[in-house]
Length: 271
Image (cartoon, rainbow, N blue to C red):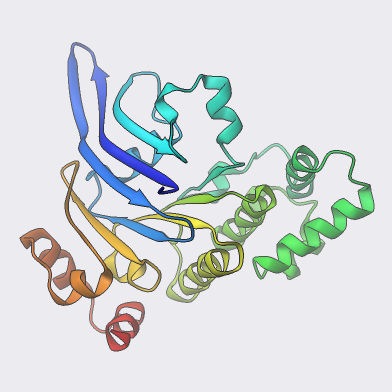
C-alpha cells in the first residue's frame, strides 16, 4: 500500500457565480521514503494540489476525488481529525518560511511550543538540548545564540533551516515542500536540497517536492510528474524525463534550463 495515493483529484474555486477548475483529475502515488516531484510553470496547479492534501485551499474551494493516507480518505475526515495529521503525520514547508513562522513570538518560543506538544513533561534542560540537536540536524548550530530573535531578523535561508528544524521536531512521515528553494541563491539552494535528501535517508521521510524548475528537482526526485493546466501530462523516472521527454511542454521546460546549470549538469552526468 502506498503511503499517499491521490485519485482523480479535482479542485475548483467559486468566484461569484462562476466556478474555476484549477486541478483537473490528478492521480499519483508516493511510497515511504520516496521523493515525488510535481513540476510546472506558475499557475499549473501544483501548489493547489499540494495544499488540497491537507485541505488548506480555503472555504471557497471544492475538492473532489480521493486522497488516501495509509488507505484512509483524508477528504472524509472532520476538521478536528485532519488538524491532528497536520504537522505530525504530514508537514508542509512553504516558499516563504518567514510567513510560516509566527512573527509575534521568538524562535525559541516557537521551538519550545512544538517540542512540548510532542514531548509533554520534558524538562527545560532537555528542551534546550533538543533544540540544539534539531538545529544541528539542519546545519544551523550557529543560530542557537540567536534564539531570542524574531523571524524577521533572519535571512530567508536561515528561516528555512529553522522551519525545517521545527518540522523535524514533529517527525512527519510525509513532507510537502512547496518551492522550498525559491528566491535563494544557488549555494543556499543546494544546501536546502541536501537537507531534504538527508531527511529522506536518515528518517525515511517521503517528500512531495513542488517546483517550477526541473533542474532543481533533478538532484533529488526519484519520480517526476510534469503538470500543465491542472493536469499531469507526463510522469516517469528522471532518466526518462530528461533523456526521452514525450510531451512538447516537457521538452520546452528542459530547453528553458540555463546552460550550464550546476544542479542539472550534475544530474545528467550521473545518468
